[in-house]
Length: 251
Image (cartoon, rainbow, N blue to C red):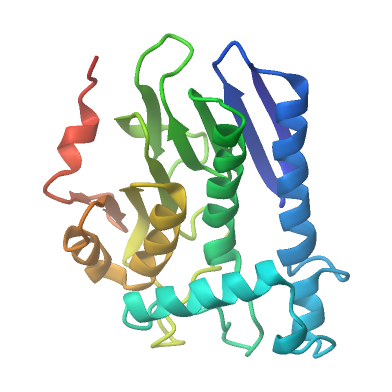
């Protein structure tokens, strides 16, 4: 069973391939994404992150989930040598570079806690994979051509229990910044895809690596347990040494 809802301004796609697929499972996961959107959306005037940015809520008054996301963001900033930062150029907070992957991962844990083994949870092209697809095979995920808005696939990867995230400014316009150089428009790299042990890890490091520009793929190369695939402004792809293992289907 597969269901789609527009949440957080993007398609959220849940596919469950177990016999246990039930309507209430889909509802529980979609409701969780709606909760996250209501709390962390900078576009909602009544969200908690907006109240924080408007100085209506102090850091001491933040909810437990907000405090956790701020802590994880600070941890990610340290792990990426400052290339991940939730403080925007205008001084406000925007947690979207971490929250999407974090929420997808949490949604996948909801399904696992309900005994579901074979599923995919996707939001805005970032995906958590578990088990097998509806053909009882590895899940096949396509990496999009960043120069073609018609969703042309330039590379296919095969996943079992991984997270895959792609960062770039080609869909939403410029929304990722280089925290170390406000004048860097990050035009050297068109997209950077990261495969990791889960979507939370893949997403946060994909965001930071994209902000690093041409050096981002080398950062992923040196990150244990991660592989990456970048496409530069000229359409030339560079992949990490172990990326090829994901391009071959296994039984």
